[in-house]
Amino acid sequence: MTENKAAPSNGSILVVGGGISGLTTALEAAEVGYDVFLVEKNPYLGGRVAQLNKYFPKLCPPSCGLEINFRRIKDNPKISVFTHAEVEKVEGTPGSYEVAVKLSPRYVNENCTCCGDCEAACKTEISSDFDFGMNKIKGAYLPFEMAFPARYVISPQIIGTEDAQKLKEACKYDAVDLEMEAKSMNLQVGAIVWATGWEPYDATKIDNLGFGQYPNIITNMMMERLASPNGPTKGKITRPSDDKEPESIAFVQCAGSRDENYLPYCSYICCMASLKQATYIREAYPDAKVYIFYIDIRSPGQRYEKFYQTIKEDENVFLIKGKVAEVSEDPDTGNVTVVAENAVTGEKVKQTVEMAVLATGMQPTAAMDKLPADLKYNEDGFIINDFEKGGMFAAGCANKPADVVSSNQNATGMALKAIQTLVKR
Ligand SMILES: Cc1cc2nc3c(=O)[nH]c(=O)nc-3n(C[C@H](O)[C@H](O)[C@H](O)COP(=O)(O)OP(=O)(O)OC[C@H]3O[C@@H](n4cnc5c(N)ncnc54)[C@H](O)[C@@H]3O)c2cc1C
Ligand code: SF4
Ligand code: SF4
Image: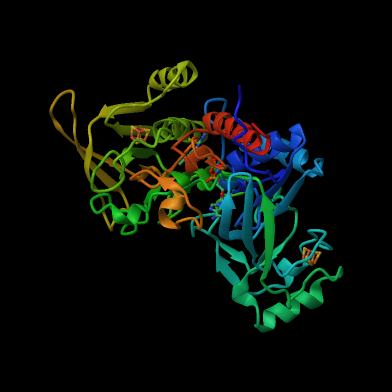
């Protein structure tokens, strides 16, 4: 005896967020045969992974994985991608949602060939959010070289200026459209997967670690950009104050994490991220010394533990168990001093290095910008999956802090949950 509990279903799925989790959910559902709308607020897909230099533990560039996914999306007519797009309103019940989406103007249409003439003609420079403000880019730009969609973007900051007209004149393909306006569209879908991801914790909120006060104290995501060949220094890791090649670097683990004053939880990935970044330094500068200050090293699973063991054997990497009390910089030399108590010996440690990296954690994007839907959140702002109610699900780091592998697994599971909503039970 079965009961038909299903509401009449609309056959398509909305995925909000085009990071690795959203890409995975969209592809898994579309490759089974469902129509998928993928809505991303940035002008490109890939999310935070697009900003990374290498993936742990294999140390391969994330660009290969992303490229494969972009190709699968391009080849799949079941997926409609909307970038520069955000959900404004969700109404309805599982199986039948009405969603209002706002599309912001890109000022460049599909004629764009990525020739770069508009960028060359543009005089105005803007701060690069992609590089965390460590770089200036032109007001007409391609977000990164393998960006999907492969189409230039014109910053709203130059609309209405003389520069904007120059860009339009420079484009031989009639791709610059300065009259482009914000638009709205309505979608009818049966299920929604929120894959809205995470933001790096704002390190200026941590009052004892010197970020924002001293240039040679950076965050782990800034280190990813410094080490990336397409980053602000073209992959050369130098310290921000004077471009010196660092001979010593300290990593401060749990910076603003596992602390009731900031993020009370563990972000799961930042121990692995620092161990990985130690390899960036050791590869670039074979004599450089790396000091990692930690409370506990969290390297979950066999492969991550093995990676940790390999780094531990490096005689130029020093792992010091101790919570960091203070980080400061000498204005004359630019050198940074890290103060901690060694939890093993009980001694106070004062280590002077040439630059420091704060291993900051992940904060769910939805904790800062509440989503316009009836969702449940835990006290830290991660979306709780209410499988009883169904219809809307959270995937990847919108649901919990995670690495790429776990995000992909979770996102595949949520594709299945979305499909189950569409199929009459
Ligand atoms: C320093 C550092 C290094 C790391 N290195 C590794 C590594 O080497 N290996 C590894 O496995 N993991 C690594 N990670 C973790 C990895 O970055 C995450 O696992 C991954 O980003 C999770 O992907 P996601 O799609 O869930 O979230 P995100 O990457 O944050 O993607 C979310 C997407 O949703 C979009 N979005 C957000 N809100 C909205 C909205 N309202 N409407 C529309 N779109 C929206 C965002 O613009 C973004 O594109 C690292 C993390 C850090 C901090
Ligand atoms: S907008 Fe025009 S000038 Fe700019 S990259 Fe595209 S095709 Fe080239
Ligand atoms: S992963 Fe490591 S650095 Fe990050 S919060 Fe957990 S214990 Fe701290």
